[in-house]
Amino acid sequence: MNVLEINNLKKYFETSAGVVHSVDGVSFNISKGETLGLVGESGCGKTTTGRTIIKLYEPTGGQIIFNGVDITGMTQKEMLPVRKKMQMIFQDPYASLNPRMTIGDIVIEPMIIHKIPKEQHRDRMINLLRRVGLNSEHANRYPHEFSGGQRQRVGIARALAVEPEFIICDEPISALDVSIQAQVVNMLEDLQKDLGLTYLFIAHDLSMVRHISSRVAVMYLGEIVELAESSELYKNPKHPYTRSLLSSIPIPDPDKSDERKIIPLSGEIPSPLNPPKGCKFSTRCPIFKSDCKNIKPVLKNIGNEHFCACPFV
Image (cartoon, rainbow, N blue to C red; front, top):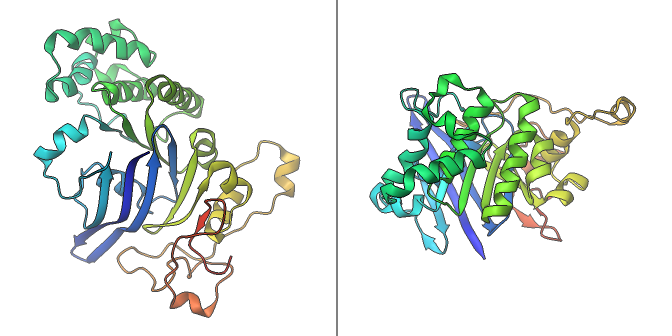
């Protein structure tokens, strides 16, 4: 059963310089209990995709179906009961917590918004803090008294406060020290097992995505260019962009690192204000052919539920 179905989702922003094509026809689904990793370079539209799904941004086009219900055209008021089941962990633990509220009040705030009985608030808040590795003494402190990793744990507790089914994790570890990143990812995995959660895990750290994701979607300039089971994608990448990304992952073994062939990309990422016609990757592609400027590639199943948007692989 699919918790989430995204069909041809688009999000454009009008600016003084023109229209920015941040998300340009993205389609995928996420089954109950799985984690879909969404990866790509900075500026490719990953965060905008997540924020449009939860309707912090209104979609320009396409369809968002959550638990079988089309929520695309819902107003913010109509979205309130949906948001009880769909929450978000934000990228920046320094900017996403109100500095004037205590940690306890931050975790309780969603319970107030979603009208959970007041007598449950404190016990639930303390249980959530303990679940994410904090304790009841932390409830009366303020965000500035905590490290980045601790603040992100508060953000996770806040997302869990209304018992959601689906959580969008928007680069939840990118602002944290490397030593803390694995702890947070392991905690998210444990929470998923214990609470039956479904994740959209947005990141640019490909090695961490491989660890946590059931399937991985690779995004480039607002479009998904490849999607497959995590093990399949990392062992057998097909799209030239995916191959280049995976070749850049650091290998801790110096001998193996020396043997590996890195696939560099030429040129700069084109502007989403004026994306290339045809294949958007054509300006940087190592297997470029003249048809690439005219043919807009479609994400197709090339076997074993491995989807790729390149007719020449």
